[in-house]
Length: 108
Image (tube, rainbow, N blue to C red):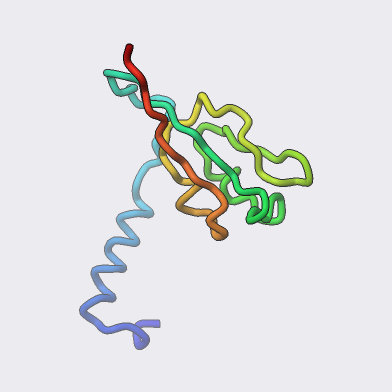
């Protein structure tokens, strides 16, 4: 493997890899919540693009477990109020079927 990569990039990448493996897992539910106005997010799943249960990446990566499988084994949003806006589902969807948007908060 070492012969496949230039030496100047191999060592820094190996160091970063080993540093990442040494990190301790963080329980996101134990982190303090930000103060100020609460943000709310809307999660949309394009059923025509979603491979559903045959993929399921977004369901597995959601830290708040707001996604699940619905009709025709397509991904559905189970509890949108719990979305924290991390966008892992959107970023990791290979089919670009998931979109996370921050909802506008009206003060009145």
